Image (cartoon, rainbow over all chains, first blue to last red; front, side, top):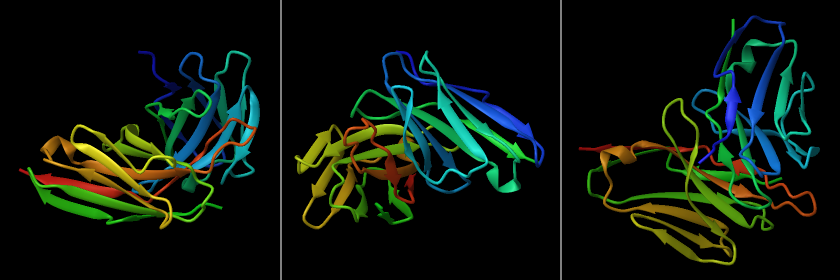
Length: 111
Length: 116
């Protein structure tokens, strides 16, 4: 079965640079979620989109923005990167109120 | 907003024994409670879930119980095996209203070690 696809899998950036993470949800899923997971921590909700509209916002810094496109894929844009942004970034998708399925994540390292 | 507490943070059991992980939530509006298993550096994988209209759910060696009055839910793993070793996260969902989204608030995780 098709799963959530995230790219890239690994990304290395320097402070103050920008990064773009991509997420392709499971076909026919209408909702995309972004989570940030620091080392040894639980995933923290950042933002979600339902039918291409932002539907909820969590602890997402103002330096980050995201959108969902007409083909339902989503991108998380991160600017002015800081050392503390180093984390695993997961995208998850779901259909209405069904369980969320997570992608394999993007490991972002800030040097 | 919702807050989820999870205990214990680490748990070691002998192979074949049972393991129990407990979570409490604060928002009585939460109505969906999934459990995820996460191996190091990998994605969280759903292992079982329960909705607020059900008190207990079982899937082979895994079961989840929910006490809405006390706002707590628990994961039970019987006949543990070494491959059960991982970090387990509980989560609570606040529901989506008209937006159709159900963000998860996760507990802090339990590192389970099954000793052979």
